[in-house]
Image (cartoon, rainbow, N blue to C red; front, side, top):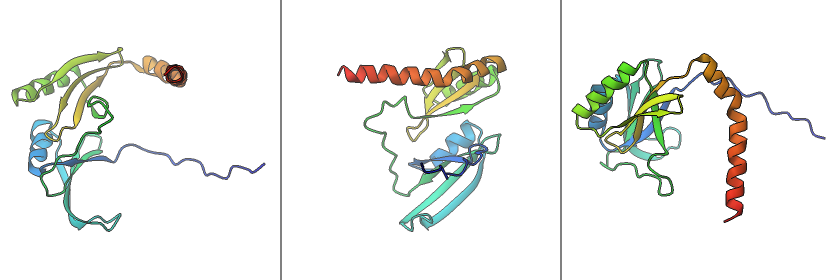
Length: 179
């Protein structure tokens, strides 16, 4: 039998950035910096993609969260928004941003509503998190969320996670087998 020679996984320390396409850099800057309070901390302007060599003029904007990670956007200069995935409901793909208190959730909700943004919630998810949902100008669904569980509850969720995933997989497979 061949011995497994795969190296151990590297330690992933956290999120550096997540990147999306935006329709308009200034519109996106206003939303993330002026409404959500994430400072614009870095901009890359190029005419080609370094990783692929593809010719494409763009600006890449980085908005920093308090932990140092960023939400980033590419404006490709054509005023075209990203298209949602045709086989996925709009509520599935979203970016959840953690806040520190219920007062911050409420304050953000009011600020967004005052700016004319449609906000869903607050919504409580099984006692785990308390969230509001809304879309940015690019059609990206965002969630501002507050963790409601204490350390003991979080550990219980962690302890149950693999069994819950396995149960879902079995349920899904049974359902798919009957169709």
